[in-house]
Image (cartoon, helix red, strand yellow):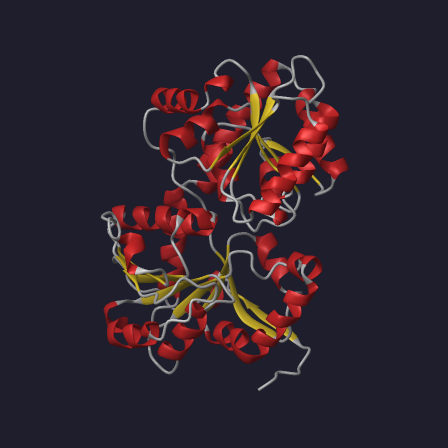
Length: 411
């Protein structure tokens, strides 16, 4: 059935209109996601970290992933039910519906992470006409940038919206956005749009471990940068991340200066062809030895890279939140980001970094603004970055906000 209405309606959940909140008690949550593999990006990392915090707060949390069971054979910290039969982009897993019907009574609510894959449709089919509420986190997947960047894919998604996704979201107790900007942008992507909106605090854990050991691990991993300052991009290397903008701006503003910091582009890339294109661009426009490609970094090496950089850069074309941005703030690193990172206003308001448009000119402005700061101003921005994290994005606040939201919809 196709939904032909062009009407857009949404309900913004406000405290005075919310259902009666249940007594303050631990909640039992089930989180459903397509994957928890770290190379898939920020949402999977956020699910892991926030789940660990919820457990520390005394709540009961289990996770269903549409991955293969062997992906988590050595997992010990989290309860993960890997129900996947094959590793596919859609993840159709008939076992999901059966498992949910058999186990839903063990949970107060279900949290679905991500759109356009089977976890949403399977949850809808299993829980419709039951007393188990489910909430959906789009994780930026309703951003209109995708419509402009991939028009053919957008029309395929519009058809899927008519057939399935609209019903998934329309029937959810709430659609949870990580910031007001993500909520605003979501309203213009697909029709019809009738959902119950809720903004939920989002964040990440304060980096654990010894900072000195982490820096040492990074220097051992990349000894060439032990005594050379550098700017850092760390995350998935994908066309939406605007890495090419950063490379071009770096070449124009910093690359030719004798005392210029290096540029580190760290992270996994699913497309070898795209990665080769970026490396060829860097070779063509940047001085020899100025750009480093260490690949994906984890654990102490990752945190050492964060702690040692001058500033963190993300000139993304679309970013509903940007977990890596919050991680950099947690390390006291100023952030240089595009205004397409949806938390840019909060970052700028707190004096924790700079934000410009997602163009080469915008990226040039970012790097010039950073280059013009003296040592004292950079140190102050780092202090404000840390304060911004603690006030807005520390994981305990995010976990408590999530629990408050879930309790509001318990029956």
